[in-house]
View 1 (cartoon, helix red, strand yellow):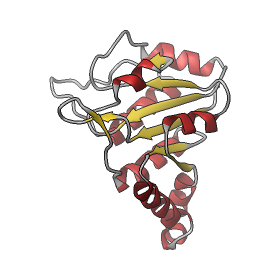
View 2 (cartoon, rainbow, N blue to C red):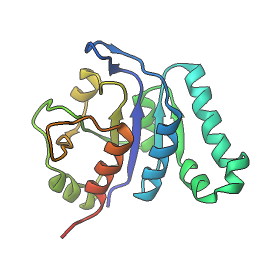
View 3 (cartoon, rainbow, N blue to C red):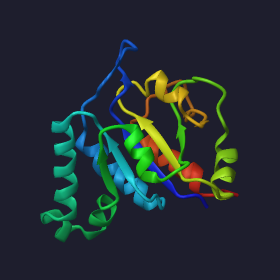
View 4 (cartoon, rainbow, N blue to C red):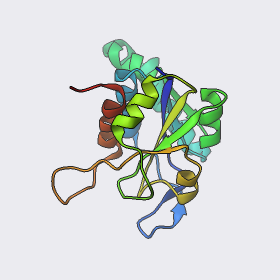
Length: 183
């Protein structure tokens, strides 16, 4: 199986009007995406944010769970947060994953010709270069991030006509679909 990491991008992402910009770090995203990444065997979880104050907050959250009082109280979460890395750009995350790393993205909306989850799972299992699975905050990844992707995964849809998952839920579902083979 290929090495797999995830990244949560806060810039460049779209705002409610479709304009590219920067979103604010959400502490629960850091906590929960770390846990999903660790549960599904990811090598790392990259928190991508260009603003130093937001990077400092991310470091503080990670430190609290890996070295602070919560590390002693809840060791399982210490293990999960220990794979978190704070970087300024998606390029930094990609470089940290290693040479030849492929960027895989998904979105809640249809934005191109996507690869089915089953085909992506088979590709991931077959071996090859590392994969960085990228998630966007706010209203999703900016077009330039999607255009730079090596693989565009199909959107996650529920049973009805409402489709507005949190990035935490979307990440967990995506990792489950990519890593766990179902009968």
